[in-house]
Length: 164
Image 1 (cartoon, rainbow, N blue to C red):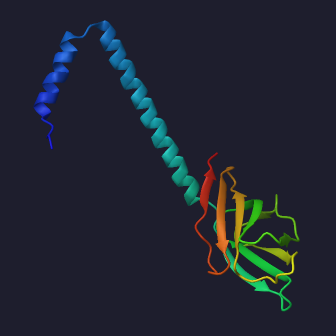
Image 2: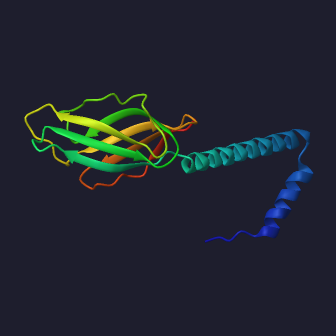
Image 3: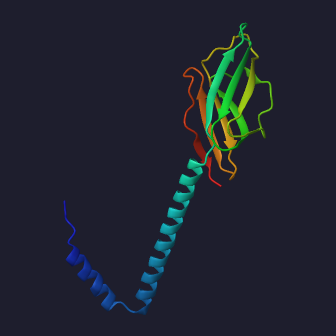
């Protein structure tokens, strides 16, 4: 593997600077300005993403209960962070489950619990073999998606889907 020689690199750069004319100076300076702008934009975006993750709502699975007949279920989610506005709900693993109450637009403040009522539409009774995936917005307009695999009784970390 070839090692970089700093002295050789500096001497090559100095030779290029000495032999270059105004056109090369302007082009080199323009490229340097563009690189610095791209670097500062990337740093700013990374900082805003870290701040968004730090201030994100934190939804946790409080309870999942299936009725004795197995036709209805109750899914409780608690917000332990900043306020969240529910956006969508999708169910992975089952296509015969209906959601009884409205989801979109409901706001869950910090420390509050929201209950989602589910009903089996087919012949098969409800069990914990599916995943509920919630999408929600924070106060800054960032969109998060979080999966709640009911067989594990624990929520996965929220994923930042759209950064405002």
